[in-house]
Image (cartoon, rainbow, N blue to C red; front, side, top):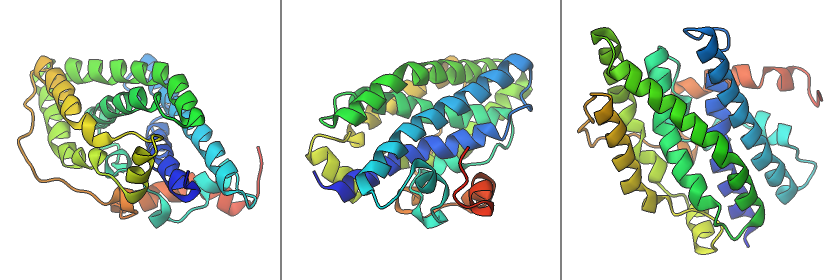
Length: 251
């Protein structure tokens, strides 16, 4: 198996969880109520835990003294290959839940297939993560329904959030060269095969929430190739602060 392709494939998965976990972590202590605040923080910790498992595996693959911390914290912005969706800011609570929901549907579908990977480590990480991500999806979809089918104001805020984030959903199903190579070797997930199921599940929840499914066919991409929105640079300045200020620090 090509180690370089496998390494980049792992980063593509891990970076999504790391960046979304950081976004949720920014809201610790700022939830609409205590229960929701704690739930959001726990989801953030779940995502960090999953990304750690991937980065630890990636560090073993490349060697040369690499660690989970150096891979996660010390790359430059263009070296992160997360999708654009997860780096979008916490505009308001509806926006945060819409972003989480749109990623969770994909994340669970992807992990269900990754369990079948010929790479036993990736399969094991996926198997361990599925229970957590199943909860993430229940949590976010419940909030989409609650806000969408709530007051006139909450309905409009959730509709605005879905409309604003929709442009980032198609990138979830784009494949890099590393993705294609790992699919060919039986280690990766062919995300193109998940697209119909994804939009079907998303549309069903939106209908239950009395929300309109956006009709726009204009989508943004670039994150998987290291081309990001302006938001990622600001996020990384917070995420990487301690590691860059105190090099080689260990907890």
